[in-house]
Image 1 (cartoon, helix red, strand yellow):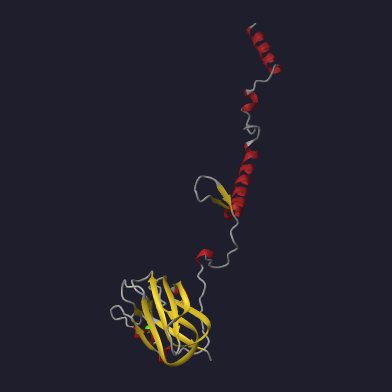
Image 2: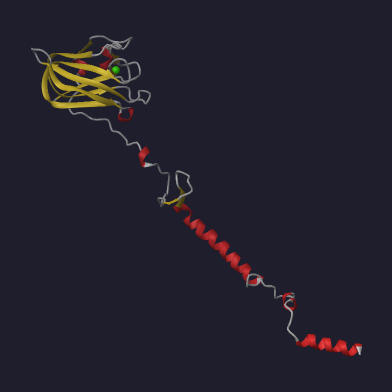
Length: 242
Ligand SMILES: [Ca+2]
């Protein structure tokens, strides 16, 4: 009897619903989120490869915003084949101005109302622009006057004012006016007072051109100088008309 009942239970079990555990534990049929492990591995490899390739391709176009607030700005980097410099920092090459005519300052007698230390007026016509060869007006005593006088009348059309061009002579503004005097009479205005920039990046030179005028003397008036307590000039070049 016992054996008969055992056979009946065995038959029922063999013909009834199959328990879930009967398939889940079967070798080679494990499931994960509806895909087998065999299917997921190549999919993951594909995702990683695409991330590396596309990430590298777009890296140069994506930067974080300067504010660092987490936003993203998309910019296009320039095609660069060599060293590059931002346009805001590019310094243009400066070519010193070539003035027509002949520099006749050598023929002139140079004087000033005063000078500072060893910086005498004659130093504006020795052909040197070094650190020792310039005239400087009396300190804190504007206006400072510089004169160039000739024995004979000269017809001129330009003057060039120079300072030492090395960067140590940093950019400064000098307020200057120019007057002239003929064979007789008093000084007349040639160039009204104005601020002129002396910039070592531009050879620390200022060129003033005007309609030809016949003179026996020039008077330069220095009203201010942002770089010193008096007017300064390393060379004065006066050009005649040839
Ligand atoms: Ca000089």
